Length: 153
Ligand SMILES: [Zn+2]
Image 1 (cartoon, helix red, strand yellow):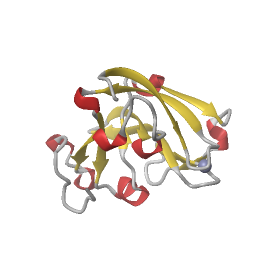
Image 2 (image 1 turned 90 degrees about the vertical axis):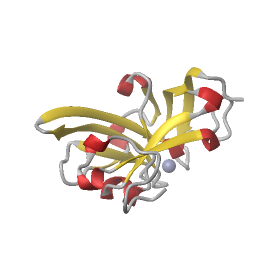
Image 3 (image 1 turned 180 degrees about the vertical axis):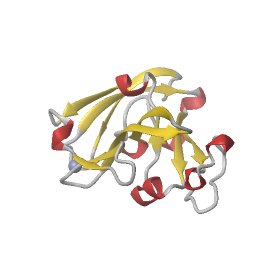
């Protein structure tokens, strides 16, 4: 049973080398909010971005000891880094910033697929997914309940 409210959940890559806890907000009927995006970065990596309660401070890497031991991928801007397990390839989280009209926007997200299941209090089948149209830099449109063109459900 997923009870609404703030909760610290456990997550990991597939092989278990990368482990973490994340502070999440469990909504009505156990829902957990995340988003998918049609940009090539999100699309090719198959990411479901979950923003944490408290942002980056809501994330604690348990293992390995440092992000230096985790694979990193940061094409194009180089300021937004995807972290993935070097052994099993799971994409676990993203950290960095990007510019919107010249203004720095910090961004930290956990790949929702790496939240451990089954786990008491969080059920990924209850996730509420929204969609962004970053492929067209259409940030003004905000989140949609339906995928934007060229984006996977
Ligand atoms: Zn792994």
